[in-house]
Image 1 (cartoon, rainbow, N blue to C red):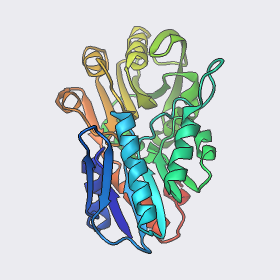
Image 2 (cartoon, rainbow, N blue to C red):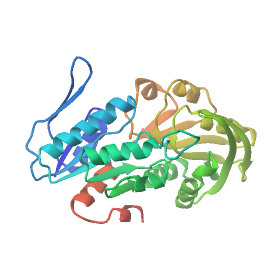
Image 3 (cartoon, rainbow, N blue to C red):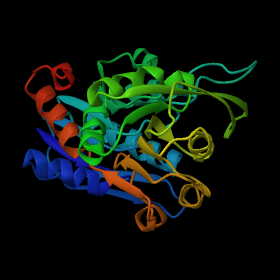
Image 4 (cartoon, rainbow, N blue to C red):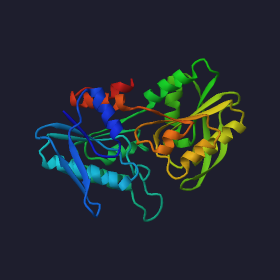
Length: 311
C-alpha cells in the first residue's frame, strides 16, 4: 500500500501517514509558467494499492486539477488500484438542478475523477448522500459523527442540560443521530433562504430555553446561517450556543462573522487546511479526522468492513 498527497492539505496527509505508520510516497506537484499542473510520481507504483489524499477545497479548481492529473499519472504508472481520498468534496452543493439551464456539477466532477483513473473513492460527510450514486466506482462516505459526538460529550459533560440543534430542516437526520449519541434533546431551525449564502431564521421547533445548544452541520461557508441561528437561539432563552461542523470552508468574512457572533465556540475538523484567520480565531477550534480516515484506509486495503466503524 502506498499513500501520497497533493498540495491541498499536507498536514492531514502527514497525520494519516503517521496513524498508519506508512511514509508518504514522494511526488512532485508543480506548475508551468502559465500555471498548468504537472505531477511526477517519484517512486515505483506498478501493481501497488495507492491512496491519493486531496481535498478539493479553495482554490477548488486548482486542487481538483491536481487530483485529476495525479490520478492520471498513477493510472499510466500501472498502479493496481487507485483510491481517491477526498476529505472535502468540492462542488457537492451542486447536486441537483436548482433552476432551468443549471448544471449538476457534483455529477460532472464525479465523472472527471472516474475518467482520470480512480478505481474507488473515499470521502467524508458528503453534502448530499445521493452523490455516492454519481460515481460509477465503489464509494465510501464516512461520517464525522463519532468524532464530533466524542468531543461534545467530553466538553459538555456535567455542564447543564444539552440540546442538539439542526440549523435547517435538511440537517435533521444528522442532528438526530448526534443527539442520540450524546443523549440530548433535539431542536430544529426553520429558515427561509432568499438567495444563495443569505438566510433568515423564521422559527425554532423544540425547547431550547435554559439549555446549552449545540448546532451541528456538514458545511459552514459564509457562516451566515449559523450566526443568524445563534442569535435566534439566544433570543429564545438558550444558556449558550456552540456549533460543530465537519467542513470549515469559512470563505470571505466568515471568520470575522463567527468571532462577532454569540457563538461560544465553533468546532470544525481538519478536512480543509485551516487558514491563518481560522488558526488565530479565539472561538474556532479544530478536531483531527486523521484517525478516522486512516482506519478506513486500512480496512479498505485489508478488505474489511468500513461501515462497522459507525456501529
